[in-house]
Amino acid sequence: MQKLIVGNWKMNGTSADIPAIGKIVQAAGGHKSVDSGLCLPATLIERAASEFPGFAIGGQDCHAAEKGAHTGCVSAGMLKDAGAGMVIVGHSERRSDQGESDADVQGKARAARGAGLDVIICVGETEAERDAGKAEDIVLGQIDASVPDDLGTGGLAIAYEPVWAIGTGRVPSGGDVAAMHDAIRKRLIERLGQGGTQVRILYGGSMNGGNAAELLAIPNVDGGLIGGASLSADKFEPILAAAARP
Ligand code: PEP
Image (cartoon, rainbow, N blue to C red; front, top):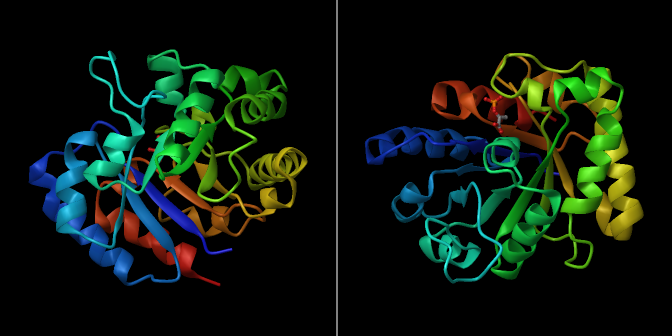
């Protein structure tokens, strides 16, 4: 399966950062065996999509409804209209900051696929949940409740992002990543049938140029969702290079 490396810019970036995006687009062009893209703040999507046609631009969230009285929210169709080809849903920062439930995330994923966007559904345990030995139960529970089972598997990816690894510089052991990705794969196949073998499972949480090769070599790690190290080509390119290695 071709690896997928997606940057999540979170609440970073203004029009002054278009040249930085351009450098990332250029770096991605040097690694054509890797699928890559950037999920940008909604305010930058249209500009980036028109400046860099052919490069995958995405959003970081969408509303479950098509339109209506939801002040400040953005629908999946609006992201698509602005030039996005994908969207992240259920990021742990939204689950904690905005109190999004698994049911909310499922609704957003459904709306995204309905609008023709690829969707990356994020799951992951907190440190307390891992310490209590509950990591796998929590993550598989999120898969069961967040992933719609009636939409097909095309355009669907899962990002396993331990909450305690995001932005902290801490990364689970290779064995723990392997065990979780295996468990997610098994659950996807149980729920979605053979199509579950084709869903890319990304690892996210402090991936960088120094640890990407090791993480991406783990079976069932089909790519990465990258926060801090996606903000500049200098940091993002080594991850793309690691993903390009056979
Ligand atoms: C993320 O927030 O999706 C993420 C993986 O962040 P970081 O790479 O900065 O840990």
